[in-house]
Length: 400
Image (cartoon, rainbow, N blue to C red; front, side, top):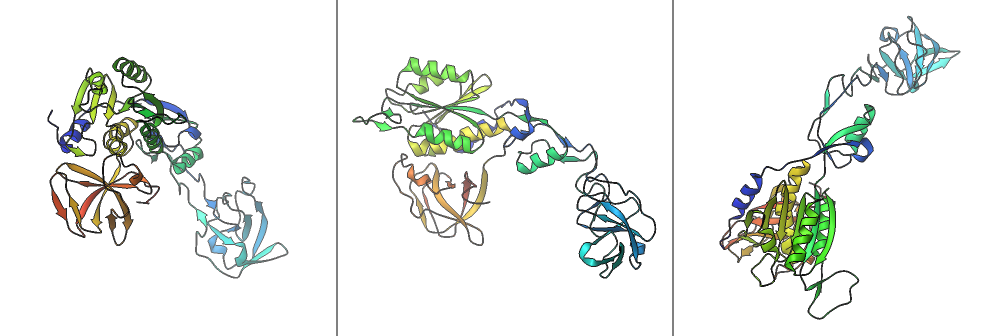
């Protein structure tokens, strides 16, 4: 079977007609979702000129006068809504200014004797007064459709008295590890078998990236059992991810089961992960990844995350240009993805210091790692300071 190029595989994924679901959620439950509607202000904030600190509300033309203090407006009170010439109202942070007052003089700028106020340090006209609509104006689109919701958006929507909002539903992904050679946690060691990490690594990675993940556990190399489990998982998930069973071995049954669906591609000229397989099942997807730990991780990022991001309306993974800290020799002709250390030193810099070399089963290279270096097809050497492409998947470890 001839493999397609990495560029062709991405082209095919990007051409897929990927559907999304919209639902209404309670504001406090909306963190991490993407807005499916514009958020439009229904009033001005503030609705009236408002004091931004504690002080005295005056008319600016009276700033050189001795003023009579006629009362106070604590926050939430608007008892004194007007003042006459040579009058002042003690006004607190967040209180509305009297309608014909245009300046707030801080408490520390005045002397008060027998309820009479004199200003010893002047301020400019309009000092410490928030204008109508300073934060937002009635009819203004404050948060645009397609915005990923953080604490800031939740706070703004709460200030608008918005209780429920429309969002794009998060992609639901199940991860199923296949292979008679793998053991689950707590199972006693057995000769010739290894403990499964893929279902835990990928479920955690997907959850970290904002998707709704199901760790579907392990299943042995049995074609009928694999088919039944994939069918069951498809009924309640948008994407079913399998690991193992997609190569050319006698017991690689996953490729046979998934091959009964609409196969987008099977086999890409990449390292690691060349036997990755993507298939469509109506409006859902089965993405079968190789069994080796590093291979499954890389192909999950390249294909599962790319499709899931579109479903959830998440932005794509961050990509950037970086400078290679040292000489690097590429031995494999395929498009290659290398775990690298990423730092910023008058620009982004990557290196492979402390990274192990060997098979695609090395998972420990991902510890303290946040990025992959993408190297185009061919065998070649890269000099120190060569510019390379980098995919960033863990911005918590490196603030972009």
